[in-house]
Length: 567
Image (tube, rainbow, N blue to C red; front, side, top):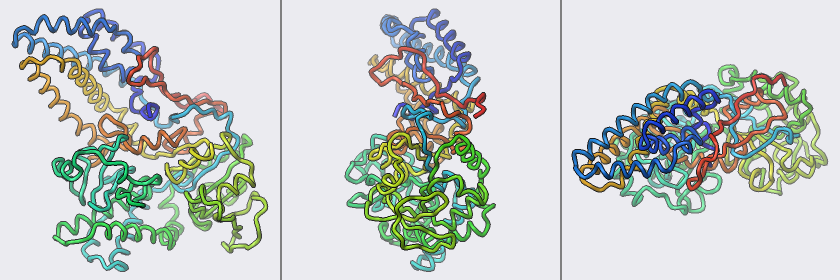
């Protein structure tokens, strides 16, 4: 999970900036032992191993100095505020060093060490992996599903007044089916207060705590392995990028019912919205709309084409496994790559029915003609240039011999695309997380760097000074705590006003982050990030110290794109 936070904490990515900050820390250490102690605690996480430059003796001397001055309340209060002001000044002085370099959004981040020199076969999902869609697609899905609710399920006509809200939800949220609540949960199953929504409005923290008898969500009511609300699980986790319209539609219909004081059953609403969204896909409504105006809905085509061409030129084998139907994929790939796109792939499988494809041994492959007709002959080998439907991974492995860590498969859905491949079959996995670009750009801003640096520093002050129990000291520390609590919503709002970052709940990783770190060896904003690395490159996760470990050496930023590579 530590590597998961690489793009969140690597605020220094080049040696020059690291050396500048080291000199600053050393100056602080020489100037004042107690200043150094606070610096060690607060910026160790930001600057990697720089905290080790600040000796543990400084912490002891800080307490000794403070204890001798805390015999009088005025003296103790003044000492604390003096320390606060000095820490704030040095935090502000460090901002230019922090912001002088930034994290490259085109970087590939590693959760697990992996070398491209070991990869012989590259596999891809289609939607949001090779084909990236514009925001128009989510609006289309929302509008069609909303109309299905009215025409098929007899929902009130007033729902038609709701439009898709692009920035309302983020991926990875949980939905309590029985309580009709949308929320963000962290890696330890704790609800992030302030991110619980009923309809389009936040639920007060006190009400959330009363409903759940605290903030913890027990394992038995969390979503199942694939994020679904089944077998007694009352939570559903929305992990698919296609689920953004579904979350918004659920919230809008909930909002309509509450505004009009309509009594309704939340479970029925969830199932009806789920069925409406499924109809948009299964009945081909979305596919036909995209095919009719493909330039409106598909973007980034030239980047995917460049990746596939590069892999082909270097003799890599490639395959495609997607749940989408052949006609839809064929039209999209003609637009992205050209009419000869099938020549690039050794195997193409459509309507695979992932994740069942990775587990169900019973479904055989079936060949599909160019006119989408199904043939009945038994499949003895998977041939280049042919199209196959359904099947299962066990038969795929038997027919191709492509097993183990020489295979790298890319997908956007952490559960349906990557989980089983990692846990059961030993393939290497790459997660495509388009949201990374936006989040990294925010983290590269001076506003974010300033806010997070000071919050870390303030947290360190609180941690160090909480041991003093006299009234004056406690009053100051409590004021610091209130300042810290007031800052936290602002950091959340920088990413999304309702739910914050996809990757963090204030300090902890989100539940989404936890699953990403477990099921993806590497992750990136788009498949085009591969263009920046040669095929000898090894991805190393950052060795971020565990809580009980000391930083032995300076922190290392993830290896960014190799601009000198001509491969």
